[in-house]
Length: 111
Image 1: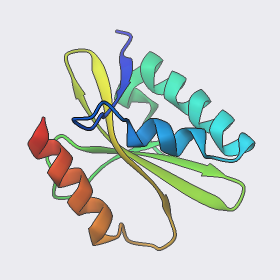
Image 2: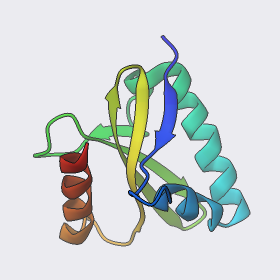
Image 3: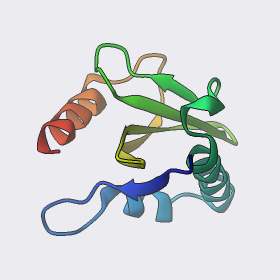
């Protein structure tokens, strides 16, 4: 079953995810879009190293994309045949920073 990707939007209609992707370097943007297409076609079946569940947050997933020396993370949920990307950031450390998890939790509450 093909899924459709949607970006989280603030009440103002602005999507921080779209802004994040648009600001990526060309190679990272291309790899991100390619991986989004895989996610649309195969859903969670693409598995590791691309998709992993977010520990401690039921129903939340992490899309992992490495481009050049950077590692990009996209938090998402799946609902009604849609992948809803809630948050994106460039990962700099082993663990997911608490600040990034807090943003995810707040956006999940909004849904």
